[in-house]
Length: 349
Length: 291
Image 1 (tube, helix red, strand yellow):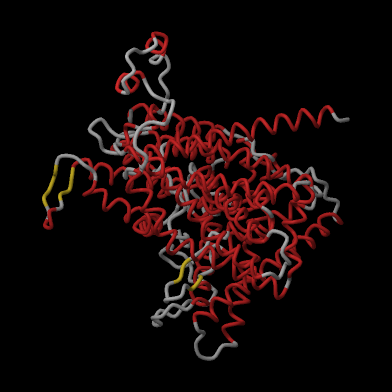
Image 2: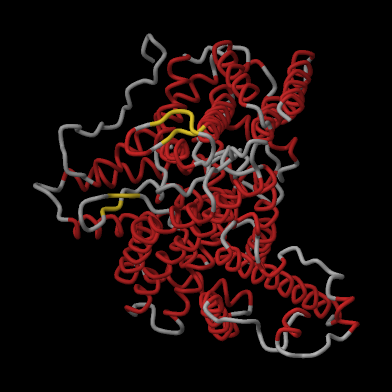
């Protein structure tokens, strides 16, 4: 209300309750992960640590940051907190700051706490931190690469978070409208909502986010570089520091592939070997195997031909389907590895 | 407290409105004093003698959630408008100055909701309601959509404000236990809230002292460096303070299992039960009528 950074704090009334519920459920595993990561460090020490860092996140959101050119704005500082504490703990600190903003200051809806935490306390810190690690690797604490990593991490982290917010807004009019077609919640289709969210964040709010992260890292390098070691220590405690650098490259590759997905829209025709019965006939094949003919209508996929017909825009539907697929696969793999790791840990002793 | 019930003038320095160019220090100081003023005023109204102040905080938390859900689920403008009227009546019965309550909600709406609701009037496809110059046409669906947004947001914000303006923050935290929020989480929320106050004052001191040492104007680059350094210093102070607080807690016998004290002081009386019943019935009726 008083201190909204751009328009990332979603108020009540913009998302349908079902969307809010889904996003809330998506945040839960990250909260669980954060709390476990805290427990791994000494237990009682965490209470004041988290309280003060949440208070810090809250207050940094109030800082007016001047952009070159004279305008000022606010940062969420999610990337910064993740760079200092590691993303697992940053999720908790930023979530608490967002909850206090929603409940006490009416900044962001109370029913949207899950949605706002997902965008600003999960997407932003994880993306921002991954990019920072790519730049920082094992370079010295005072390396300029770390400042650059903080800048790019903050900038892209908030921009990706705004992409998620844009998608959340954009799906509302597709699924929820009155009988005569008036949207019940956020009114714009994805073709309007996504650019309207992403562009200002790429150009202004994201720049502020990156600027704040870079300026603070630069200051800490000069004055208090010990603080920059904390996130590394947390990762060491989790025993994942060595793997995470290599995993980082894998993730970067995956993101590059995902960004290249729309290239598929340029290619004509169907992927080789994935022809349907009609296409086979067109290719000059005199007959269609009977089994294929009878079986091909058996299973109707929820996103048939990777399209959301309600969207009325085939390319956009294709990209959204791709995003949904990536998230779904990543979630399933993550869950399976979790289960496997737990099974192994139980066998060991 | 001023006689008309509006918030008291902040004790912190106010920004000088005659300056045109943005001044980061002054703007941040103004934002901080707004936040403190907001908190002070809520503490003050929560102690007044009114309808909602007399209710059990657990009832208020549950009722707020039920009504928020009703606002979100209802598909009828009349029902949501009716719920907004209910929040106004409750504010009036709880000795919250109505002008302040309405202004607080509607003043900030244009920033977020107005910007989004206004174009919806024209963009939403549907039969035109009124023709405007430049080939723009207001559609019936557009008006419905814009009203849905404005009414939902204002009613939801009003419901949240009613809870905060009639309940001390500590009681809100204790009441969270009905939602099965873990005690340690309520404890952290309570500490965070207190440290927000402390750190707000710290930042305000830092900026004031900086301001008092600056003659003339800082350039944009200098201002940016100052903001970065202030945030960095604040982070260092926060981390340092957290270890001191930890030692202080330990020396007073804190173990990791703590209970939020004082919950036993709440006891549901007959009026609490009836208030809860009325709120839930109202929410259910709104959802059914708004189908």
